[in-house]
Amino acid sequence: MKVLYLCFMKLAEAKEQFTQLWGALGSSWGINRTMAQVHALLLISPEALCTEDIMEQLSVSRGNANMNLRELMTWNLVQKEIKAGDRKEYFKAEKDIWEVAKRISKERKRREIQPLIASLNVLTDIDEDKRNTEVKDFVEMVNNIHSVVTKMDSAVDTLIKAEEHKFFGAVMKLLK
Amino acid sequence: MKVLYLCFMKLAEAKEQFTQLWGALGSSWGINRTMAQVHALLLISPEALCTEDIMEQLSVSRGNANMNLRELMTWNLVQKEIKAGDRKEYFKAEKDIWEVAKRISKERKRREIQPLIASLNVLTDIDEDKRNTEVKDFVEMVNNIHSVVTKMDSAVDTLIKAEEHKFFGAVMKLLK
DNA sequence: TTAAACTTTCAATAATTATTGAAAGTTTTG
DNA sequence: CAAAACTTTCAATAATTATTGAAAGTTTAA
Image (cartoon, rainbow over all chains, first blue to last red; front, side, top):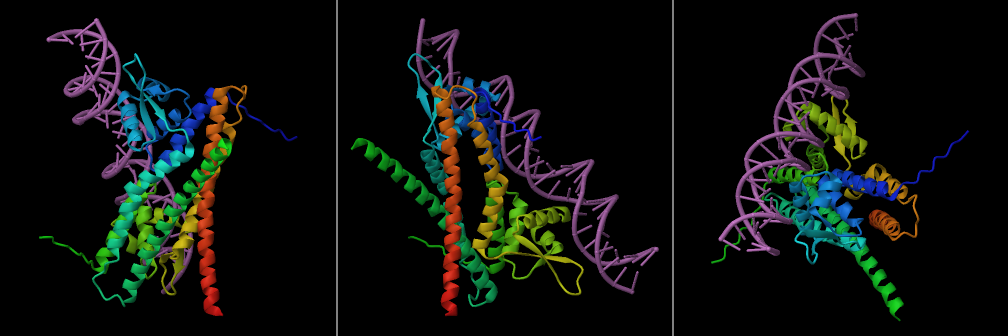
C-alpha cells in the first residue's frame, strides 16, 4: 500500500523554517548565516522589528544582531524606522524581491566583480614574447574568463531590467 | 608632474597571481580556497599535472591536494589522465570556459537550486486560513523568491545555450 | 546635569571549516 | 608472493570566521 503524506505547517513554523533555510543557503554561498537569517526575518515580518525582537527570535546576542543589521543597511537591504514616542530603533527590509535582487547585484558588482575585472586586465600585460604559445594560451584563458564574468553580469542586469519594465507596464495598464 | 606606472609581469608571476586571485574569489563565494586554486592551476597549465606538482606549486599537503582533486572531478571540471609507462595519475582541467560555466551551473542546480525550490514549495502549504493577510503575505513572499530564483537560473541557462550556438555557428562557417 | 535608555565596539571565546601527515589501502612490477 | 609505487582516509590540529557580552559611547528626558 502506498501512503502519501501531505504535510501542512502552521504559519509560525513555516516562518521559522524559512529563516533557517535562508541562513543555511547564505552560509553555503559565503554569506554570514546570521546576516541571512536577520534578512529573512525582516522580509517576512509585517512590522518593523527592534534589536530585542531579533535577538529573541533568532537567539543571538545584542552585538551580533547589531553588527548584522548595520551590514544589511550598508547593502541597502534594510532601513531604520523611528516610531513616535519610542526611543528604540526599528528595522524594516525592502520587500520587493526584484528590488532586493537589484541591490544585491549592485553591491556585489561594486565589491567583487569590478575588482575582479580590474585584476584580470592587469594579468594580460605580460612582459614576454606574445607569440610564445604559453603566453598566448594564458592571455586567452584570462580573456575568456573576463568575457564569461562580464556576460553573466550583464545577463543578470538584463533580467532585472526586464522585470522592472514588466512591472512598469502593469502599473501603466492599471492607470489607463 | 604626473607619473604613470605601467606594470608588466613575467608569465610565471602572472600565473601565480591568477591562482591567488581565483582562490581568494572562490573563498568569498563559499568555495574552498584550495579547490579554487587547484582548478586555476590546472586551467592555465599546458600539461596535465600530477599530485606532486600540485602539492609543490601550491604548498599544500598530499591529503589536501588529493581531496580537492577528487572534489573537482565530482564537479566534472577535472579529469584523470594516464601516461604510458608512468604509474602516477595526472590531472587536466576542461579548458573551454563556457563548458566550465555549464558544468558548474549544472552541479549547483543539482546540489542547491533544486533542493531550495523543493523547500520553498513545501513552505507554501500553510494549514491556516489563506485569506488571513499575514498568511497571504508570507506565501506571496515565498512565491516571489521562488520566481526570482527560477528566473535567474534560466537566465544563466539561456546565456550558456546562446554561447554554444555562437560557437557552433562559427564552426559551421569554417567548414563550409 | 544626571540618570536612564538605548547603540556600538571589540577583546575574548566559540564554532566552523580547512589542512596536515602518517597509516592504511590499492595496484603494479619483478 | 613481496616490495615498491602510488592513492586514499581520517583523527588530530590549525586557521579562519562568527559570536558573545560587558564596557564604553551616545542620545534623550526629566
